[in-house]
Length: 274
View: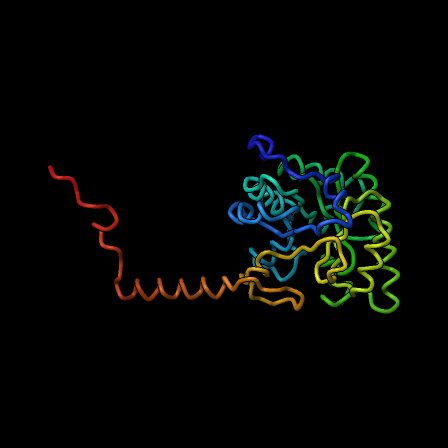
């Protein structure tokens, strides 16, 4: 872990101190190699429950289990030195009661070495956030479009338009007052993101919520062009690695079918003389 490698990882208080300063750079990661790639450039690395869709082929995040999050959290922890590591609490692992949330969050932290957990919900989760924070569990909150509630919300649509705006503002205020150290604002209008960012004392991290936030987070596979099931409109593709990988695999397949294998002497060298 970071402490044994001689590099001090960022902490939740240091993330809070970045409020209104240099924007926070945040990405998801689910594996050790990707964690190693993003660590030098990120302030926060989230082991997101989006892993269910990105790596496991699930139709939504609802089928993700606590065991899956712990396994991927352990893999990401091995690849990080500097970034603050946050692990998503999956659907059904924290909503029942503050006690349930603490038991599962404590397990996640103990078994992955993460610095914080993330959970979805606003006013309805304020009591749980307060309970966790009082017991030493740093919490990143998540309001606006909350993917675990996609069925109740009627799909992955923009939240916070019209009469919804005040509800989401109250959600953000509630989680900040309850003790969350940061809050993700997903798919809300810029004017609302700006108002919330100015009103609360903790950093706001946007995903499809405009540059008005204190930072941004993206699913790394979306940003790299590796996930092709759908393409969020707010994501800038910095690479098209999926297309490059597909072309490379096709070239390999062609070479094998044409029997263009590496010659043994090129791989192993000449056999020793006896």
